[in-house]
Image 1 (cartoon, rainbow, N blue to C red):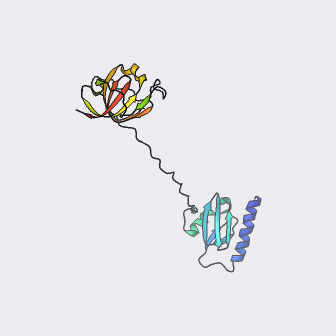
Image 2 (cartoon, rainbow, N blue to C red):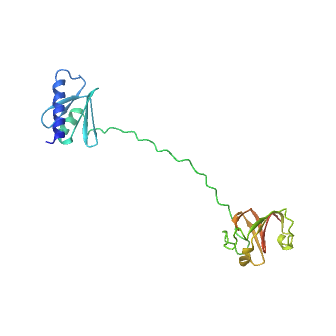
Image 3 (tube, rainbow, N blue to C red):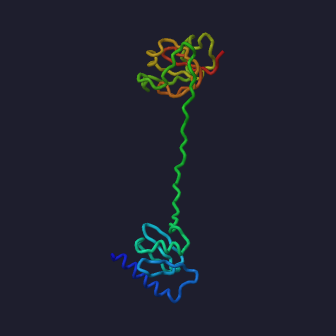
Amino acid sequence: MGGTMKKFVNVSLLIFALLLSAGPATAKTFYLRDGSTIEYTRVWKQGGLIYLLVNRDTLVAFLPEEVDQRRTLRAAGMKKFPRLAVKKKKPVAAPARRVKAAPATEPAEAGEKAPIFKDSRENTPETSAYIPVTSDRSMPSEATVNGKYSDLVQVMHCPGDRGSYGEFRDYGWWGGGPWCGQSGKAGYWVWVAPDWYVWAGRK
């Protein structure tokens, strides 16, 4: 028997001798394989050891092979030793992050090719700029598509788009989003090179 086992047995025998004359009336009997017994108030199993709470101030532990487990469990009216419940700390939830939803898009009008809504390599900040609606630039007549659109909300200068859309394109409604290195507004988009015209109304 190893040193640890001898220590447990010696402690148990000492406790047993002390409790022979003054054991609690409600205590249960714990049986060891060497034939000795201990009166205890509580028993449980944890970390590969069987623990006994003899009284308020005395706690002892035994290796499972030192214990007559079948006899001890039968005397206690149990099928197996209970395990000590350990409360687990609840994980601290990280605060929820708000993610901005992508703008909704609608299909282009029939017969029109929808643009790829990502920044064109040609449309760098040096070659593209937002032109305010209040700009003094003269607006080409094609921008309204013969009066089809009204209420101009944005003009975007994107000379790099000429290679994709030619000189003119009535694209129709788009929900807005990143385009040409800028933030495009929702509306009806009309391409008249080298600018995009965004309209709020349609006849």
